[in-house]
Length: 193
Image (cartoon, rainbow, N blue to C red; front, side, top):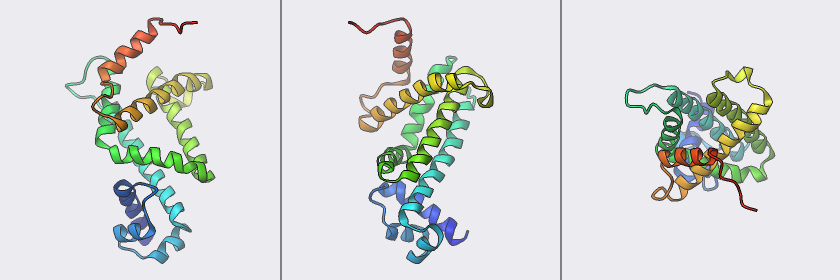
């Protein structure tokens, strides 16, 4: 690996250990075995390197998560909805540092337009992926309405579940409770006037 890749790997390591806001250039250099000058040379700034590291981590995680969702296991429940939520919760538990960093990066994107644009593009990709998974229609064949409805609602549900699991895992809903709640909502409870 060259310095550029070493820096990227070191930045990812530092992000997961210290978080976005608390990672310094010196942390990255220590984790990567490089030098301070190489950050500016290869990435322009520590912030740009951290952004690249976060996006790289999301891409790696997205591939891993996609494979985990698609993987068939002998002990999987027959219910695809239950299986999905079990895997989402399992990912939150096993990749807690990445999920925490994603929340932190969202907050930081308020002050970094290029990061915000990249996160927005990632959200759109996530909506499309969720809609494809829910409907069984390949991503390239989905209409925009399905992406905006089914994909957006599934992403909203995931964000809420993520927040609960990161904040207080002891009271966060189980996969079974999430599925039961979704089915109860589907049964027709209406908001009262």
